Length: 389
Image 1 (cartoon, rainbow, N blue to C red):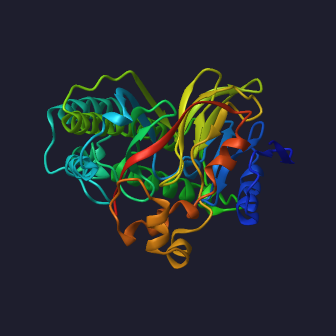
Image 2: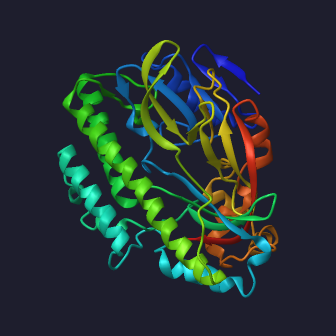
């Protein structure tokens, strides 16, 4: 459902708040946008740049157009098990995962597993090659690897339309990525102020290609994107171990999918090599596999890209918020949350009221809007849900 807003902004969202549209229009006015911003079906208000927007830029990157959770994204594994194989008390599986993976903001590992040590060694070498020390941003960054975070981050055990069991999770670059992003957003704002450049929003401050500040951001951005990917790999390995212990047998990884949805890469669009920032969007180039989660209690999707050139080979990354966290807490009740999560093993707490499915756009509407962008391969339904407070 494509709609041209102006020459530099095209939307696929049938549900779009006026404030969100105004924010996206401001970004589309920047002179280095080429050819246009693609607004995804799950678009909603963000910091500076709209969440659910794909922003192609010539000779510059807007750090806030990547966001503060650099490399945030999804991972999924299809196992050989069927939902009927999950016998016994599912709360044991949930609590086992909760013990294996640190949850919530500020919760990290007390020590590293052998696999985490290997991944940290790799990241340490990559940081040295990039010419920076992650400890300048977060002294305990090594202990953050293999931790989930809070908000809309989750770990789930799901089944698809044939009953096959999938392990599914959502997380990013944790505290160290947040601090890297926040630092470079401030650097960009300072440079723009010093040059006397007027922007429609201060959070759209950008770094110009060819400058020392641009190069430093790019090096650290790429490191944080890889941290996020390895963070998901580490958590997935732990979830696989917990699941194998619960079912009493080895776990075959019949399919493993990974994708970022907050990141920047160089790509070619409309005849130009651009810096393409996907803030709440995934790569949906033709044949590329992807993951689009619904909200807590709703369906999620394993997809493959159709390669829509106008959408800059992109698609939505999830349901997209319809209520702010504060408004959701004031609007919905614990009983409504329990009703929405009926039949799913989850931690029953008021802490998740702002994550209730009703606080998000209906995922079926988002996927209908994205029909030209991706093909649905599997529809996943939750069996177990794990979240941080």
